[in-house]
Image (tube, rainbow over the protein chains, first blue to last red):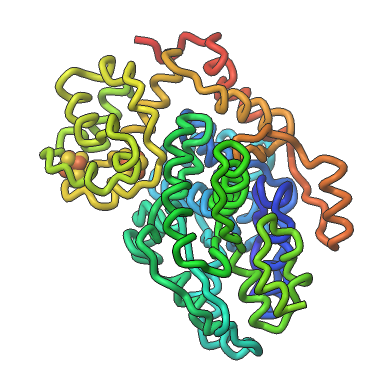
Length: 290
Length: 167
Ligand code: SF4
Ligand code: SF4
């Protein structure tokens, strides 16, 4: 399987541990990632205050992948949402499509509506399948206690995300974690939004949402919280460092990217999946996979 | 299409005030001033001008939970987004974060400010680290992003230089 790999902004700049582990896992599962060249911001943050800018940016990236003739895979909930939403809108609305295509002409691009956009957990779940992934698992993670956080934009609005998962209580990430045999706990604030979007709009809201989750999780003493989005990851990792310096609150909940966990289960070392770059160290896990 | 028509298209008037949205909203749990049900009600009773000036309008964290659960399929989150866009257009509230974002994207093609940080391009340090890890150098087309930002005039809107959209 060959896919256009849309990196987005935050991952290449800030989260090499995520990118590294995802690339390795895909390689092992026989998926060829073709890095998209000449890409730009997916437009997601512009959806908050300027729809036209959002749509043009998303359409440009979509048309790039169409030219390559490849479906898009991304590691970010925001990118997946922005591109999938624009893809659906432009496939359905011929007037908007014409407008956008008029603009794309000068780059030699056209939105035709020939491809799909998927978050990588959807590729893992639907296109590779749990059975095939299981065949590649060589080490069980049964001695570790993990918690999952799916996040919002990869499942909601379900209308744009093709109802891939339950939009209120998503379960696909749990299924993907469970095949590693880790002790995946249930917790009260499991489906609580990370609050990253509120950064710079209402910091109190953002911090309070973060704090609720961390308070809850610290009770469970998990070895790591598993995320699938750079924004959620940073909100929980950098956010905890902020809670520590600003409010002297220490929760010490290590945060990891799902492909790091899957990579370990597939026989990779802690270093190979970039766990040395996580800022709140999942000590027990690193120790076991030296 | 003006903002009132846009809100109608997002089924503002379908709301029957059941309160499911507020009951499901994570922000309403941490900030008692925030109440999406009331926001929807006030938007149609008192009009857009009234809600555009409310500070609570900006408390929403865009989780889309309310919209998913609304029995009347009111596009609540999208209504809030349309109101944000209108407030920015009219210069009622222009969050600095948006200005930084638009500038970063115009000058670098991307924005890395997901955690309230500055939007910067991939610095030499990052590129070196990527090389060490065997990660390829991303090829970003800054000119196109700049083109888009210029074509929509979003920077002028954010800097209050455009009167477009004002009623
Ligand atoms: S859930 Fe829907 S119908 Fe109920 S109050 Fe909220 S917007 Fe109105
Ligand atoms: S989208 Fe906004 S209003 Fe709706 S539930 Fe989430 S935070 Fe609340």
